[in-house]
Amino acid sequence: MHLKTPIEGFILRAATPADVGTILGFITELAVYEKLAHEVVATEATLTETLFGDTPYAQVIIAELDGNAVGYALFFHNFSTFTGRPGIYLEDLYVQPAMRGRGFGKLLLAYLAKKAVDMNCTRVEWSVLDWNQPAIDFYRSIGALPMEEWTVQRLDGARLASFAEEFNK
Image (cartoon, rainbow, N blue to C red; front, side, top):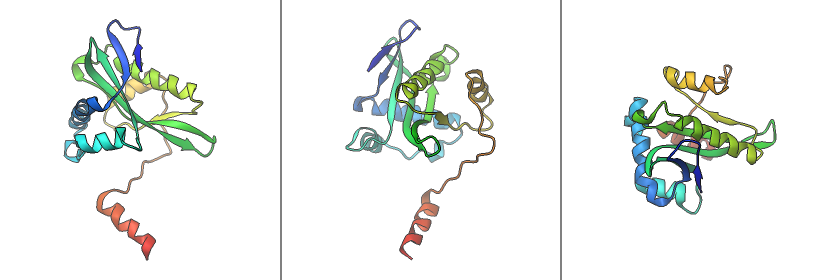
């Protein structure tokens, strides 16, 4: 998939295994911005396996300006039992700082919205850090609403492994 956009020289394309280094670079840049670089343990090998292996767990769209990667969106499908239909969960939306404000992020997100509509999905969802006001303002500008009564919960690392042992007791 190579999609031309209304912005001259700007395209969206499906990532390939050759993009794994670029994807990891973007993940790291995003983590630095979010003050979470210490949490990045992904490697090119794990991304190759999980994005392009026998069971791909997510999809990646690369945003390019004049042949240079400037951002990406990583997403996967979720499911709403209330609607009985799939949705899209946007894990990462990232545009390099020098490229922001030119409409690239908006087009990436609009593409995912179109993909969701075309696939008869009922929603696109994502999380945003509560201190990231520029992102929050952007999301409000496109019509996104906060899920005020919902709080993200997580089990990971040692807590995940410990709780998994409950199954065997």
